[in-house]
Length: 142
Image (cartoon, rainbow, N blue to C red):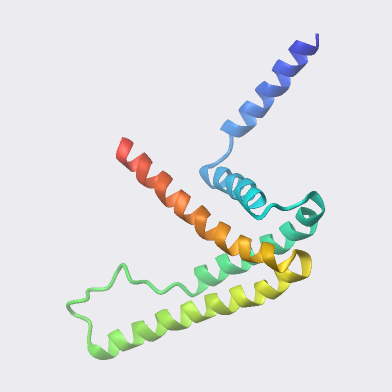
């Protein structure tokens, strides 16, 4: 009887995992990766993740509302004044992103030790790199 229950529960988890969107899978992987790399305790996780989720939401909002569109520019037709304007927009966006990261550096230090905040910064960079590698691997398989 216990074996049947175990098989049933595992089947439910399997179905739930299949029903996830790619974005949800990436977020689950991000949570697991950061938790492991930063070495968060259960107590730290309880206070860290709400702050981190707010940080990610603010970062996403910043990127959505202030994105500098460089993909639809005819660089051959761009005047010096337009190029200057685009450059200033890019620098302003990067500065706003840095300002947000600095703000949350202070917020993270309130809930986890500074050494773990530094680990977080590294873990985020490592996570992005792993995603890039995974996408390149998938594209190579197609």
